[in-house]
Amino acid sequence: MLSSFLVFLLILLFVGCEGKVENGSLKAVFIFGDSIVDQVNNNNITTLIKCNFEPYGKDFMGGKPTGRFTNAKTPSDLIVEELGIKEVMPAYLDPHLRVEDLKTGVSFASGGCGFDPQTSSIAVFYSHLYMLFNV
Image 1 (cartoon, rainbow, N blue to C red):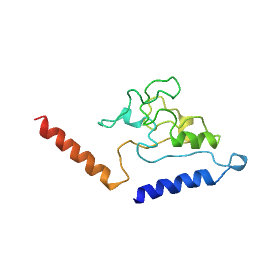
Image 2 (image 1 turned 120 degrees about the horizontal axis):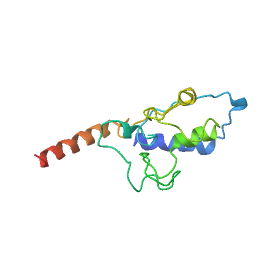
Image 3 (image 1 turned 180 degrees about the horizontal axis):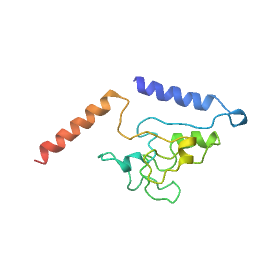
């Protein structure tokens, strides 16, 4: 319930406010979160929670699976694009990450990290279930 309210509040803030940065005073954005803002970090770590397969990425640049938990841009991409910082937010674990990317911001988000305490308990439940039936 609380997480639904927070999502609603965040959407309300984005829709109701037209925030513009004057004179490019905001130079960098760093993102922390879960799958909503994961910019492909999970492709480069050992985890079962990945989305580098179809249909993910079909509406993104190139139309191929990217590892983002969406078909197109994530909210963090939209934020940095609107602020005029860059077109897409790079992942911190991207093997092609450049120093310039670190100066303007990266995403440390990882799908399945779970800010909601129930996320980890569900993941643990499924891993135990998997072990139980695959012994």
